[in-house]
Length: 218
Image (cartoon, rainbow, N blue to C red; front, side, top):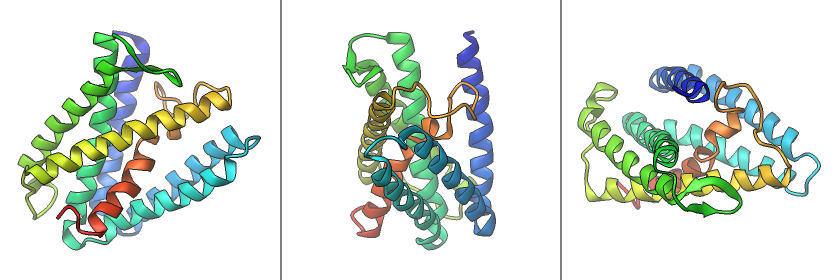
């Protein structure tokens, strides 16, 4: 097995386990976890973009993004856990599916500003996210008293959120190219910086918070 891929799997498992623990615990423990992640992400963004015109806009967006993360976990009562996990699972499975399908199938490149992205990876991100959301809905009672149903609405938001997550990934890749760097940091083995790992999430969570706040998806 490729050493980088092995590191990526191990670090992903550690991150996912820690994240799930803090999300389920909620309260001040979750808030502290999110605040630390915000500071690290803000630092990596500033380090990457401090000499570029888009630095300030990125700082403002990150503040908005992490406020959305906080609100998504705390603003929907006892169903907040289910909603938060739903979005998190979509983002993680989109990333894993995109990486795995892209590596295995390769094929035509998706876009020049992110040369590692392929059409196979894009489709793989959609398929794997749908599969994982279906499984989560089936067993969501393990993390919450509310059991999600895999409805057409859930399928729709899975597709939309996966799309936003993939677009966010491409956007951050574009900014990295402008800054002439490969990774935003080296804090996570196999992934680089924290921003490299959550690039799609910082776009997907604000989008999802707005969707659920206006009751477009119930």
